[in-house]
Every structure is written in structure tokens, then in C-alpha cells.
Length: 267
Length: 267
Picture 1 (cartoon, rainbow over the protein chains, first blue to last red):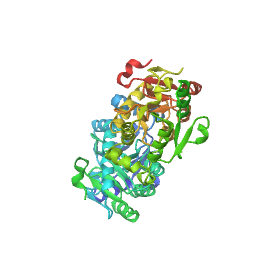
Picture 2 (picture 1 turned 90 degrees about the horizontal axis):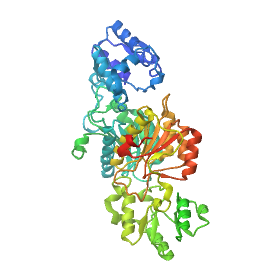
Picture 3 (picture 1 turned 90 degrees about the vertical axis):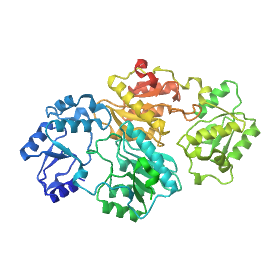
Picture 4 (picture 1 turned 60 degrees about the vertical axis):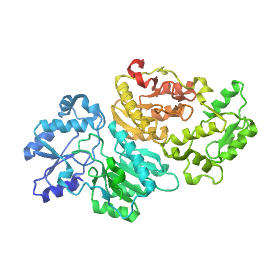
């Protein structure tokens, strides 16, 4: 996703500067774009680099690894920032990210969602694949929706796998691929299950949207799933053409649906 | 737990007959007690064996593996039973068990909870170990309680692991040991996390109560946790002396607490 943001932003005529977090991104991937690397939590250093480059708009994307508080470099400005954030950092898994966006905007930057740059990243409601969910899969999608919403309400995870009405697994911080791999070993005989991914209620849609891509499809196929159901307009599909092609090859469906009006949106 | 039920029931003067499910229980463990084995879903066979033995009271315990519907032996009476249960079998992970208890009672048996036989199995509120939860661990217990309750409300899982406010993992059908093993790989540096186990809201307390034992403590210690918090009066501690001894050796706390009045119950 970060590389797609770079490409799309340049295509739209923007100057792009990539600030990479050490250990989270590989600078070799960003050789074609002005970039710099900072340590996790080195807020002062990041601000200095942004100001030197004249950066005013930020897009936060890519996979984040929430660091332990004790691993942060001392004196980098992160503790000062955490002091401003206060207890929000400990209120749920999204609390820290949300609070950081707020603080960064107070400091004069504007945070844009990746999907404002990569316009085709969020599919609208509809079936993306040749395969479609049958009645059993639709029932699993309904059950998964109830479970993911309940989890989202307490600010945990964005995904669950349901097969034949049974919840095989629920996602916390392990990531969707690890969830799918584990559910492959827990699956029952018979009709395959469904991965359901939803936006959390109240989630800031500029950061940390649920995301799938070709690799997700591979793990879902290996786990014996029948398909993937994602929240329409709220789930990033990285490289949509490759993702749909992978699903069509594996015979999986990908359905973008409105969880508030599910029955009406099944095609 | 099944062997402890056998021992305690005999100590109380009851005749005991053990009906084992093929593939779920090892008959070698039950050589000292009258027993028989049936296939999963062989309801008619099970009823015949109970009647031949004059069984009127049932205790359902041990680890159950929910079979896929297609794996049930045809003609064993399970399909007839499922027809009586109807769609309840597909309403959540507890739906099937609850409905089976209802049907079995309609058929003239009385289902007793294991804890009615093994009297010390359900600790009351209080600290069981030498170690006690500190403020950080108490905050993690509060967060874990909110998460497990939200999950329980949609009839999924009974456990979660929280470290430094971050939900490392949530339990579905993989079991607590698998949850702990996975969280060991996801843990952050610094203060260890907490495993929280709660009864589901509305759960029939005669079946499938959350359970911990010495093996749970070993996995929790290997995952770097600081302790385990269980719902007082609702969590079975298998072999309490060995469980507490294992926790004391590893320096873990085990707290039995009332989730409705947590602050008051911390000792």
C-alpha cells in the first residue's frame, strides 16, 4: 500500500517524501522517491525532517507494529507526545493511533486517508469475483458480522472466520494471515467458511482500515475458505486486479457488503 | 476433570458409569470404572447403554470437539435429535450444547454440573497464589473483562490475553493453551500480561464452564504472563493444589474475581 500511495500521489502531481520507520519498512523499496528513516517514537526527528522538506500533508499507511512503551528511544520526543496523549494511549488498540493523529494535527499537519490518494482502493458494495456466496456462506457472513461488530465495539480486531455457524477464530493483533493459518487447522469437514472484515464502529477512517490483498486470498484458500466478505467502502483492497484474479483462480468469492443492510446487498 | 468427577461421585456413595465418546476419551483412563464407548452422535446407542445401566443423572464433562454435521454417523439418532433441536444448533457455539441438555432432560435424564460433584472445583473470590496483581495487571484484567464479555454476548469464546492495555489474543474454538502459545510470540517487552477467563452471559452453568489447570499455568508462564484472572464461582480449577503450586513456582498470580465488582474484589 505505501508504494501505491507514492505512485498515485505522484500521478496526481504531488511532491512525495517518504518517512520510513526503522524496522517497519525496507528503504530498498523506496529508492525511487526522496525518503528518510527514523526510529520508532523519534517524534522530534520526524518533525524536523517533515519541516525541512516542507511537508504539510501526511498519509499514514503500511503495517504498524505497536511498540512496547519501554522500547521507545528516550529523549526522542515520544514521551512528551505520550504525555500530551495521556491515558488515551491505553484505551483500546486504536486509542494510540487516534490520539497520535489528533496531536499531529494540533502541530499543524493535515492527515489524509490513503484512500483519498489511491481512489480505487475501497470497493463499493457488490460481488468482485466469479464465485458468489451461497445460503450457507451468507449465514456465516451474518454470524461473522455480529461477532466482529461486538469485538469492534470494545476496540479489538477487525476480522473473524466462521464455518457452518461456528466461529473458528477471532482476530486481535496477530494479523489476518495468522488468523487464517490457524483456522485452517481448526476447520470442520464440509462447506468452507468465510473471513469477515469490518471497520470498527467509531474508527477514524484515515488510519488502519481493514486491508486485504492477493496474499490474504492465498492464505484464505489454503485455509479451505469459501470466500471473503469485506465492508463496502471501508476495506482497502491492495492491488485489486491481482486480488480478484487470485480469488477467481482459487474459486473463492470476495463480496463487498454493507453490514447494516446485508440481505439487500447480496448479489 | 472426568476422572475427578468419577472419584468424587464414588466418594459420595454414587454408582458411576462412564460413557466415553470415541476419539475424545481414552478408555485406558477408565479401566477402574464401568464404562462403554459410543461414536459421536450415536444418541440411540448412548440412551440404550444408559437405560441398561439404570442411569438417571448425567454429568457432561471433559473436552468436547464439535463435529462437522457431515461427519455424524447416519442413522445413529443424531439427525432425529438435531431435527428436534432445530436451528438452535446453529445459533452460536453454545447453542448446540444447550439444546442437547434440554432434549436429554425432556427424555427423562437429569443433567448435573460437574461442580455439584467436585465441590472444591469452583474457587470463590480471592487470591489463590502468593503473587498478586499490581496496578498494571489490574488494568489489564479490567480491559480483558470488557473484551471477553463483549465476545461472550455473541456466544464466542471465554478468554482473552491483555498486556499493557493491548489485547494480544482472543479465544474462539482453538482452546486456551493454543491462545497462550500464540500470545507468547506476540508479547511486548516489559510487564507481562494477564489471561482473563469468564463465564458467558446466559451460559448454562452445567456445561462447558471455563476451565484452568496446571497445564494452563505452564502455558501462561511460557507466554510470559504475570497471572491469570478467573471468574469467581464460575471457573473450574482442575486439581487446585497442583494448579496453585505450579503458579507459585512460576511466580504467577491466580485471582478469582467478580467481574461485576472488580475493584472491590482485588486483594
